Length: 321
Ligand code: BDR
Ligand code: CA
Image (tube, rainbow, N blue to C red; front, side):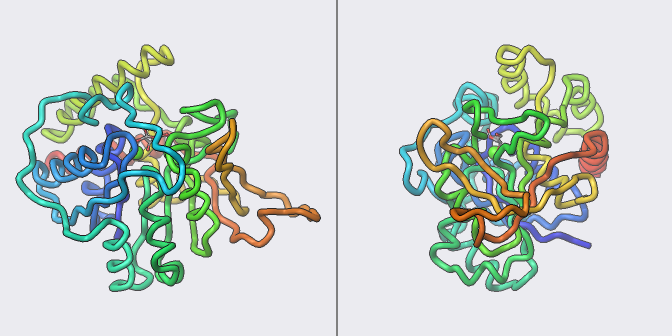
């Protein structure tokens, strides 16, 4: 079964790894990359998506999205993690192709309406484009097949946050948008730090990608030098967590993940801004801001070796086509 996906992304080094994974795996049909601010400013995110499309010959569309959060002041680009150019400061030619003329949220609305119940929205950046699409055209809630999000942290295995002690970067970048997306009446699965911090690309694993996956493997190795330096200096580890590719792994093989059901809310201001909370107990309360919201799915466990095997297998086959 082919999953038709629109991948909403802020490329970004692990975004590039996820984009290439989606393009590589034969069970995924990559319909579009819709871009959003986050790891980089929006013009750089969009340039990077176009660069990947041109360099690796993707057929998908690219549509440029939001440059800032719905309400909060922008946090600013993650230059320390992804470099000035979002791809670890490797030399890149400017792409000579252009984005679709529509704004990303309009592209999402049009495409979902044109293919009812066929499109899976996968978001691996701040959730602004998805929230704008919902605000502009709430009827898409009933027309999307599934929404898969890399974002949030629910405290499983003590994974509580990365950009703050209690917030994950994508949700922290636009908490209001995340609350709109999580509370909407559409089927959401969240692949947060609870599982992405349980799967690890070691330096040896990335060397194997370089050695077995042709040009695409060499590209991933090149852009990940900067990212791995960040992990080494900040956390003292030899490798990196597997954030955005985990969302694609879920789309390809959901059985690699264990899910927990319950409505989700996001803290939108104050010291815990960006904190994600799922109510998974059936308790009743006089005041309950979760009570009337749709139960969503949060990944709480992962077969990490299964994700690593799936990624390497997909990329090896792609690199040797
Ligand atoms: C998320 O934040 C970004 O830096 C990564 O690309 C990923 O989407 C991890 O918290
Ligand atoms: Ca990302």
